[in-house]
Image 1 (cartoon, chains in turn blue, cyan):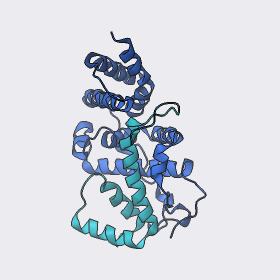
Image 2 (spheres, chains in turn green, blue):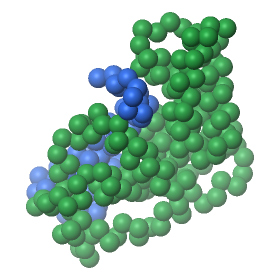
Image 3 (spheres, chains in turn blue, brown):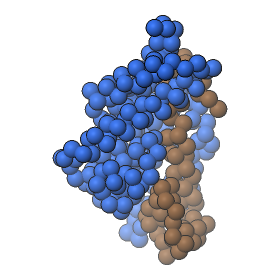
Image 4 (spheres, helix red, strand yellow):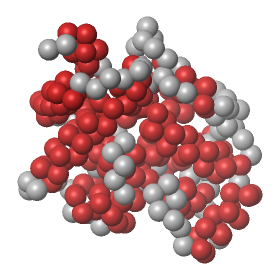
Length: 193
Length: 68
């Protein structure tokens, strides 16, 4: 075994595991997916010019492992009532009776949010916000945004209707937006309009 | 006419699917008049970008910079 490669791969273990846990919400299943990823990566042992290339490649493998796990699970019963994850009226307080933004809740300008993407502290906040999403909502959102499923595939895998799927994705985005707004982007920022 | 709450639903859905012509038009109309929803729309696009970048990101500060 090439020790240098195995060390390099092992260095990503923590990031891979966090990603898998966020998605699967099950540490044992996440460990299995990461372990399989590391083994597959070792077997292939490709030459990469940079750490980031290697990491992207490993995440691509991990995504497939996570998809496999989700597919296995969706064939099992007792998925629970997915649509009830975040209550229907959770974000009602953001709007007035006519459905317009409450003055204090109007989305503010996040400035140049691209700068946040270069900030390592931002990613810790981002992960924490993802982690705060309820399990099913997070799963649907991550299937869409991280694993690249389209909504039709999500419906099929999880046995939900397209409307349910859009509702869950919307609630996930509302929750994530609110969490990032309050914990990362300046909460005292002047409101627009 | 759309209110902000309905507009947010469409702005989320347009991340996943193409909107019907009428939906698209009423959303354009609403967003043109509402700065709050304009910000919301940019924030939705940002969430999408952040998710795409997340796997390449190094959380630990001592690691390499993420690819640009």
